[in-house]
Length: 216
Image 1: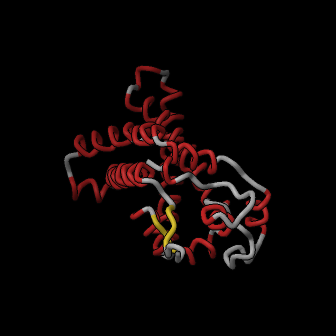
Image 2: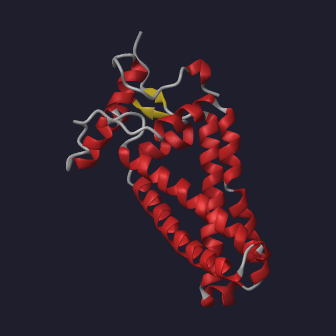
Image 3: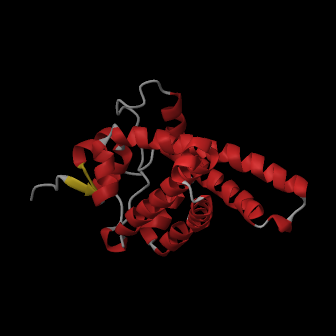
């Protein structure tokens, strides 16, 4: 029996979480740009409406992440993203990290670091956003500090998102994996060799797969 051409990479729950977070994140970035750019604000108008959308989309960001925890595949991948291996350190130090010579698991070191930065920045923005939206909770000096931190973390997160999109645009197969949940066997072996070996049963101790019966 011939081997399947494609491999399962992401469960439906993971793809839905990614899409929901992406939509909320883009709305937050666009509304933030409008609020902080006078020319854009004058062109759009309705400052109160824009601000309301920005605030509530920001507060909604953690919701799909928390709902995704109901999926075993999602929880398993969170564990993988939070685990740095010796191969990840080698990948970071290597100048030829993309040539497939280093057996990478389901996520490479760059993806893991990006996820940490996005999660940390989102937490900081959520906390400072609470202080800015309900200013009576703290003293004036705290609110001023919260504004400073919120603005700079928003800028940093915006740059991270732009970088993420740029890299995604260079890799149509990775985008297909997030869109359909499946990737080609050839791409998997070239980009995530250890994960491909584990999924196909040819590896010995790679980490990163979920049984098809558990993917939901």
